[in-house]
Every structure is written in structure tokens, then in C-alpha cells.
Image (cartoon, rainbow, N blue to C red; front, side, top):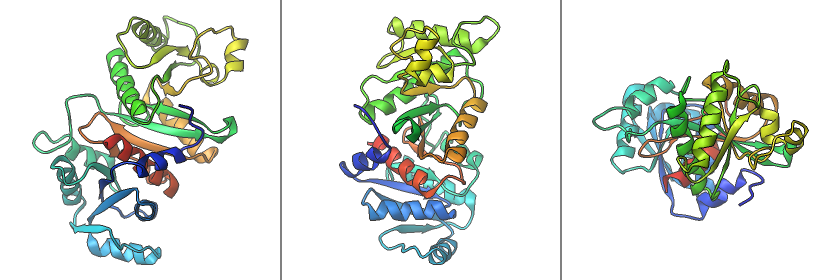
Length: 301
């Protein structure tokens, strides 16, 4: 499957059973607009959990109709988040979305042992990035939002989460580039050793459903010409679907350069919980939030 732009997410979402999304503290203008756009496109059913008066005032200010959207009135952020998570864990909703609330507050409820969404596996963030200057190529960036300095085994878990997601969006065998500052193994750079180990684990079938190689610098992971110039021979070189970053700083910076400087569209979701969690920045555009809702709904199926 060749993906040329992120609109395919909305097509996939609209073609299957409609999911229900619980949105905790939907006070950001773009978040509320994205929920309304998702309703208008018949993508998901939405439940807004938060201060009902505040939600209605914001919608009126922005000229948004809340027809067909359920509102659950919870005055405090803490209670709104708790109610949202319980709705998803209890089966009243299929996925969770973070609104204008601190990520730490949301994750505290997600990880609650009694009624949270933790499944026992690793939580990781995947951000799909559309790059129009490269003909509309889509790259998955992981993990720039959850795991700060992953060791080798954590990187395996991050890969497994991303691969499962890619299978659900129709990519049968994603190509995964383990990134570093250089494309050679250097004993003084731990991430290059991890990349080489991940490549060998992929060769031996310890990591399934994908092809992993590395280390790659960013240029030879995404450009066949750059890989050829440097003499790199690999099916992943220049053809990466997923970019595995060595740490959270790298992932955060690459993602924000694309989003804010290159003005590209994206879609972000937290994987590894019992249900997907749509997690975007408060400064992400309405379109990125809408695409993230679509991605989360597809994963939820």
C-alpha cells in the first residue's frame, strides 16, 4: 500500500464501524473544532467531558454547533479526565482524546490500576507526518512523546506498537529506520549499537511484521540518492516508513520542525494501552487534531 497523503485516514475511518471518542477537557478552540468536523464528516460519535457551560460558551464564540454531540458535565479537570478514562475502560467509548489538560494529569488516570487503560505493555507515541515536498510521503515518527531515553528492549516495544498500528492502516510490512547522527556503528554512540542490534533482531525474526535496519542518519533513511551517495545498501535506505528516534528530544524536535516550520500536517496517537489515546499538542492545528481522531478511531477497531 502506497500512501500519498493523510486524507486516507479519514477515508479508512469513514468506511468502517463508527467509534465513540471521549474528549477530556475540550476547551481548546482547535480541539472543539476538530470534534465538530469529525461529526460533520460522520467519522466518530463524540462525548465531551468537562465544564458544560464553558464548552457551550466556547462553541458559541467560535460559531460551532454542538448538535449531535453529547456533553458530560464535570467541573474540574481531574474529575473530567477520570470520567473520560472510565468511559473508555468501561466500554462506553472506544478511544480517548486529550483536550486542554496537562498530559501528566491524563496519564495518571490512564495508568490507574483499578480502572485505567494500562494493558501491561509499553505505552509509546506515534506521529504520522505528511511531507509534501517529498511528493506527499508519510513518515511515522516514534517515540517523541512518551519514552525519554529508551534502552534496547524499550525500543523493541516501541517498534512493536508502531508495526501493529501500521498493519491496521494497511501497511503489511513497514520499513523501519533506526536513526542516529551517523550511519555507521560507533562504540562511543550507544544509539548506533542499539540500531545494529535491532537490525540483527529483525534479520533473525525476533522482531516480526516489518524490516528494521540501522543505524541511519536522517538523510539516508528518507532519500535513496543520499543512501546511494554514501554507499548504503539496504531495503530500508531511502524507503523508510517509520523513523525510530534515539530519544525524546530528537523525536520532539523533528516533529515540531515539520509541524511548525515546514507547516506540514500530522496525526498523533498513544499506542500500547487497551484503547488508543489521541494525544496532540495544544498548539497543533484543527486539521492535525481531526486527522489524529481518524487515526485513533482506525486503531480502535
